[in-house]
Length: 370
Figure 1 (tube, one colour):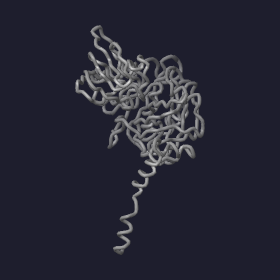
Figure 2 (cartoon, one colour):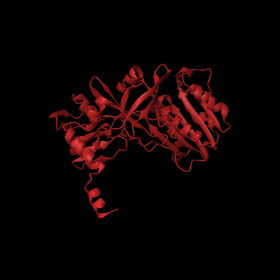
Figure 3 (tube, rainbow, N blue to C red):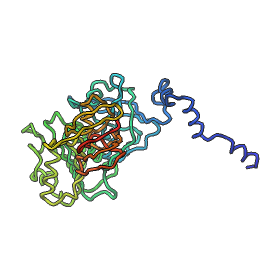
Figure 4 (cartoon, rainbow, N blue to C red):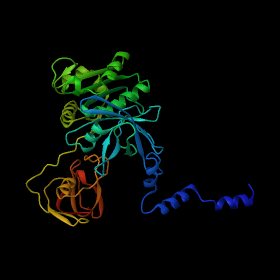
């Protein structure tokens, strides 16, 4: 390269510089706001996904196949993503775990969404999801995933819509040709409430080292087990459980039941779990103080509920995703006061600090930037 060529190249703007220039010209809106008018899937920075297939396998669940935009970096089985939809002009975001294998070769992801009675986004997707609908998407996050090297034995336990992250683990292990002992134990009200039933039956029929166990709580016939989880269910489903690693996701009752049994057996370190129900804030009689929402100018008596719930009671609408302290969507700055994390029990009195509204309760007077 000649000196003239080097000098000329040094004067050429970088791609990053051009992008910054275009974004500055697009002010007050981001460049992607204009691009989406032409094609919602053409983005510079925003990660989105187009729904390419919709399947309703039970009366209250919908399985969506989605094609992410170029920014997608993939995921590890067990992790979650945040999906955003616009409902009545307002974007709402919730967390869902991909249910497909992390090795899916077409670059698409699969989500199975259960429509909960109070789930705004889940009910919207169950009723309105269609091919061609574009939703916002986040990169995958979360620490609930399989270790490397893979354990010699794996027990997967799920209940209801908690099936999605552990189903992803099962599919991923199948793609890896996993040869260890593997049991998939799933709890449902009845046989008709089991998502992906036909696929799970096919998996059980085709591999000697894998066992699929269905437990029904409201159905006395059919299935393999009946009633709620206990030590007898554990021994029946996976007699080798003491030497395996267990991965659990389900409703609070199932989670508590499994945790208690594993604690009694001294196997807490072999149990790995993902919660998809928000922790409960226990209101005690000594609640005091006021909560000040400084940006809106609203002040209210501390009710003992989480700051997210108290903000909503005050008529505010802070952004949130999971309501269980894993997605960090509801993070806001606490300017003063002391808060307690209802998941860990830890208190924090440091001023001007970002906290998660959905798992933080005020201890006395608190001021928060909302």
